[in-house]
Length: 477
Image (cartoon, rainbow, N blue to C red; front, side):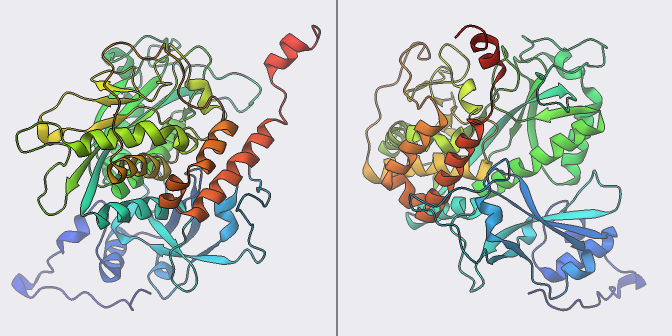
C-alpha cells in the first residue's frame, strides 16, 4: 500500500524550490512518494488503473488521483480474464473450471508505467497493473504474468531476452455497420487511398495531421517510435519500436494500440489491428525481432567471440520450428487471423528459416554479430503482445534447453510450398493443448483458460451466417 503523502519541502538554495528530476519523466516513477508529487505537479485529476485481458483489451478502474495515492485496495473479478472477445464465457472442461465464487483479484500498479493520457480533456494519467490473489500469489493466467513467467525461466539460466516488435495496422473509413465491408479512408488529397504504396512517403503524407497526433501522443507518454512507414495495403501503416526488455515493449505495444486508435478517431476514421480487415488487401502482422543476452557477460549468446553463429542460435531456431506451430493460437488468436495466413501471400505459412528471406517464418536479418537476431514473422497484429512475446520466447527457450537442431536454412522462396501451420483456429487449439512442454512453461492454468476461451470464440463464430454462404448456397444447393 502507498505510504501517506508527505509535504515536499523546497530547497533552501537561493530561496527557491528545486524541482526533482523525476517530475519531468514522461513515463514512470520509482515509488509512491514520487507518484504523489508527479501527479500533483501535473494537476492530474483522474487515474486509469488498467491491465490487459486475454485479448489485450484494457480493463480496469478509474479513480480520483487523491484516492489512488491513499491506502486504496484495487480489485477486479477473476471472470474478466476468462471472457471471450464477444463478452461470453467458456464451458468447463479440458482442465478449465470457472471459479464458482468469481472472487476478486488484486490490482498492483506498476509505477514504472505511470504516464499521462494525452487525448483526455481533463488531466488524466494511466498506470498498468499486475494481478495477484488475495494472499499475494501471482495470478498465473493473466497475460502480463504469463510473459513474466517465461522471462523468469530465462533468468533461471542467467539469460535476458531482447525484443523489438513491428506493428502493422490499417486506417479505414468509419463504418458502424458490421454487415458492410471496410473501405480505405480518404487522405488529404481528397481521394480514397489505393494499395501498392509500400514505403511511399507520399502515402504517409496523406495522413500528416493524424501521424503528427500519433507522434505527439506518443511523446507525451514516453513511447519511443523508431520508424513509421506506409505498407503495401491501402491505408496500411507500420510502426517499429526500439529494441528492449520484453515487458517494457509489450507495455508499449499495449499503449500504442490505444494511442493509434484515439488519434485516428480524432480524425473521424478508424485504426484497426484486425489481421485481415479488407478482402484483397495484405494482412497485418506483428513481427517480433528476438535476441538473447548473457546477463553475466552482457554478450549476445547467438554470436561467438569470433562473430560466428553459436549452437544456442541454431537451437533457438530449432525450438521455434518445432513448437511455434503448436503456439500459433497465441500468435494468430482469432478466426480472422487465419485469413492472413495463405499461400503465396506476404505472410508465411511455413516453419522454415533463412537469411534475410521474408518468405520464411523465421528470418535472420543482415546485421553485425552483436545484433544477430531472429525475426518471427508469423504473429498477426491482432495478437495480445504479452502472449505473442511469451509464446515466441518460450518456443526458443525450449529449443535451447532441449538442444533442438534447426533444419538447414531455405535459400529460395518458401511460401508456395506445403503449409506447415494449422489452417484454422480449432486445429490450432488442439495442437496447443497437446504440447505439454509448451503449456508447462506458460503455466497450466493459463493454457487451460486460454484454450477454453478460444474454443468458445470459435463456437460463437460458427453461429454467424456469412455473405459467402448466402451468395453461393442460398439458391444453388
